[in-house]
Length: 416
Ligand SMILES: Cc1cc2nc3c(=O)[nH]c(=O)nc-3n(C[C@H](O)[C@H](O)[C@H](O)COP(=O)(O)OP(=O)(O)OC[C@H]3O[C@@H](n4cnc5c(N)ncnc54)[C@H](O)[C@@H]3O)c2cc1C
Image 1 (tube, rainbow, N blue to C red):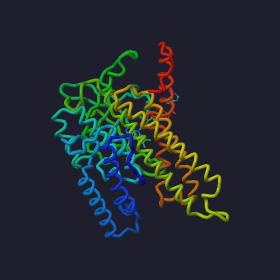
Image 2: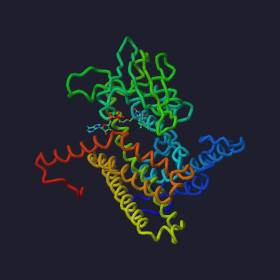
Image 3: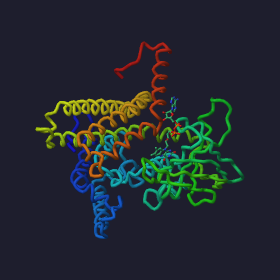
Image 4: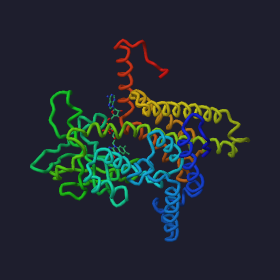
């Protein structure tokens, strides 16, 4: 990955990009297949191969720690690198270039998102009990919000309830697509703790509650098949699950805000993640066009292919500049809600187009497991509906723009 200093960002961001790219280029990309061979579970693997995979991963992790980049999303007092929002966004772009690199830097979803929520909302006791073991890798976790019978795109409609009974919450509900659910030792469950009339208080009706996976009444029904493969995105029934009142995260009624905190910054991170993968797909497409001969000449000389390179260049640049502009506004404390929705729609679609072209240029190899493109393609498609589907964000953008004009502004300030 060709990472050079960016003249307009801080020295610290350039240093983080350089150090991250060094590990990605030297330690991860040359070993990409072997690093994950045991996890992918090829039946041709020997015990030595498996041991070699684990050893390689440990070696990379040690180098990440040496470089001071371990757990970049966590504050230093919790053993992380303590990066700020912009530093982290730029780092995620570089990390996403190589398959699985982020996990070698201690960023593994949904644990990393849960860790950030626990850092912000957990009490000191909750931190000791759940956060520290989660950081140390002694515990695994899931975030359980979406329900099969309610629209995930309108999370305030969720039906799972937590009713207070003495010094316990009693939780009843049906969730699905709770990622990492097969391994999780606990779930952060989005629950309705108030019954509200109308729309006025809908934001204050939800509370996130920590539920141990082995609590009686937690029934993990199945791992849902995703893109034709078994997955750890699970369906769960919470049937009269009792947990102590102190398992609520933050103030009663703060669940919606906690989810917004998670998703707002998360959307920028997801987009930077998509950009890193687009960058890789772009490089792969151009490299292949320089070396593959078809119908009497290299692919690079065919104008159809040149068109794909040019279109992908524009997609990459437009998506990247939009995302960085949005991230800078957020870092400066400006209202970036319209920009967040814009990147949430634009970037996954641009990512999808770039990967699609890269696959086309590679032919059959493009859809094989020898390249990361097919996984990227599925990921890009999924992003168009996860974290708020395209339609919801388009509606939000239009609402914000229309409101600005309606309230007497001279027009939208695109210079901002
Ligand atoms: C791989 C994967 C992992 C996931 N991991 C988690 C997890 O760990 N925890 C968790 O809680 N959830 C998780 N989810 C769930 C995800 O967040 C939801 O799928 C998402 O929020 C959309 O909700 P829904 O599926 O209920 O779609 P719905 O809300 O039913 O929407 C369906 C479709 O309706 C359309 N639509 C919605 N609103 C409007 C509108 N106003 N106007 C026009 N059209 C509209 C959109 O096209 C949308 O795609 C995961 C999903 C996937 C695919």
